[in-house]
Image (cartoon, rainbow, N blue to C red; front, side, top):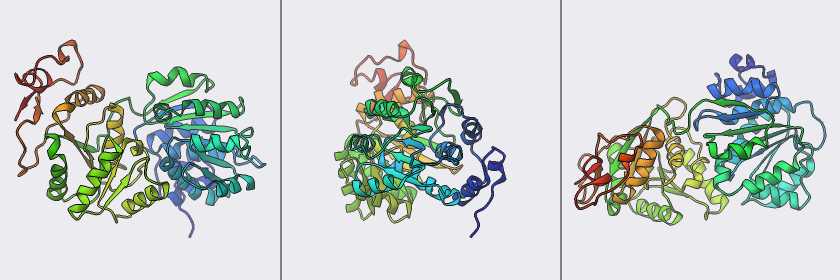
Length: 419
């Protein structure tokens, strides 16, 4: 079957083979980050690109870099993509394989949790593009089975997350192993100012592409705040899924143990549930994600380490079982729904001790999350309902002072009330 030929991508300067690969992926029109980044990358520019999750960042760098290395010969790799999690690496590899079927280039993936032997074998046969997680790539470099001296294009994907996860020393080591004369691309959902000095030394006069600002959430996601006492979170989740008739739900918890507890409780209610966190074997994580993607699981419960590695269309709702401590994690969590123009739902369960993290999210996103109660649910006394008139701008007057018993500070008065 001949792949489609989306003319809009050809207009960006991509070759016929690459464009046919885009058609095989099912895309017809470039997203804003693709439209801005692809011509710059084809021109050889270093690029720092930030865009909301779900906006097509993978194709924004994969398509032009495959074209940039198309004429290069030798064992390779000629291009390297470094990304923080196995799930992200797998998703990038999946996109590359579809396009490479048209360009006849070779792509390989190296990541933890998988056997060394097949990865070493792929490298020995030669690859044009290598997709890697930092830890496994360093292991293979130490074993002298991968040589990065031929890399002409280096991509650091989700650079801020790699910094958060402690991968930056490994990233520096990988960068040093690549030629100084290369093209470097840095892509992420957010590029916080805190990492700018770190990346400046890695890029040569980069062009910035900013499709969204830090803290911006997608307009296609309807957000709702659901105050509750901690002991009612699981029963509220069960009632929410039943009442709203949610078909595919992604639940985020703060800890691995909480993920397991919530998953067990939902299974006891007869729901089909998958689990994703760092203690799960890679094969089990991949199986859970695939079953969720295929609609065989109603609910997937995960930790934040997975928040950027779950690329599944048709997610009805994201539920923040715990309010994330990092406001950026909130943006990434809810970005798993409302993708590709579809409308999604994001529900955040907030206990009395989570008002502080909630307020930091609202300051970060510069908008108030509206309070929504589930009709018919019997809420326990003692929950805190934030005041609808609270501000999303952080000032000295928003500092928390006062006590719960008197209803002051974030719990009462200007900021909220007990029920």
